[in-house]
Image (cartoon, rainbow, N blue to C red):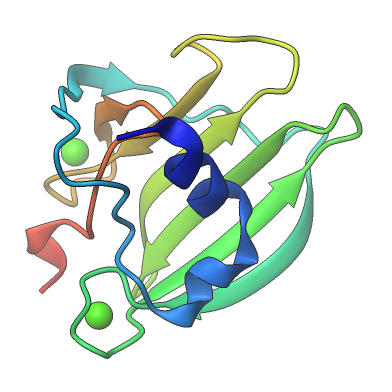
Length: 129
Ligand SMILES: [Ca+2]
Ligand SMILES: [Ca+2]
């Protein structure tokens, strides 16, 4: 209902505790469809890596890598079995979807075809199962 949860999820290491990558039911999710280019890692350093259960089945299938740059922007990637299927950027200086998003590869072809806002809900793509 608020973006507070999502923000916490995106930025909080506690995601590893096992919850879904879900933010909240009830937010009308409207992912944008298209082709989206990853933001790139230039200037970012890895600050944390952990395993997470993105679909709630008890198995931690997803490796989450979190990054930060000197400006304080946050980034994470989600990888399952070597497949990078989500890449997020959260900017401290810029508002809006162009600078705060999760890119998502829904069909495992290596190209991001959806873009979510940081307060939207997503789980690992079905094609990984
Ligand atoms: Ca799981
Ligand atoms: Ca794709």
